[in-house]
Image 1: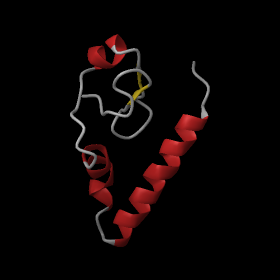
Image 2: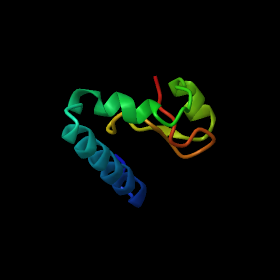
Image 3: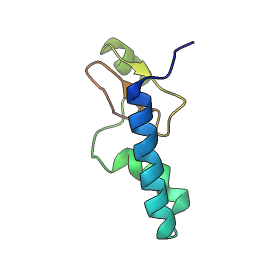
Image 4: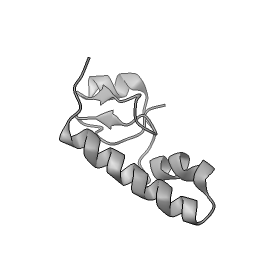
Length: 76
């Protein structure tokens, strides 16, 4: 089991802010999908994340790759 890090807290806080902003516009259902694709980064596969030295974070919205070459990109 992995312990939470400062990186986790940063992403959780950012996601909460985006969700709150979209809730004010009545777009709560689209918050996760919009946040994951708004940056324009392509979605990668789990093996790309691992091969690039990262770890797939299934506990966060958009399942980002944490660390390595694909840090922050969504994993399909």
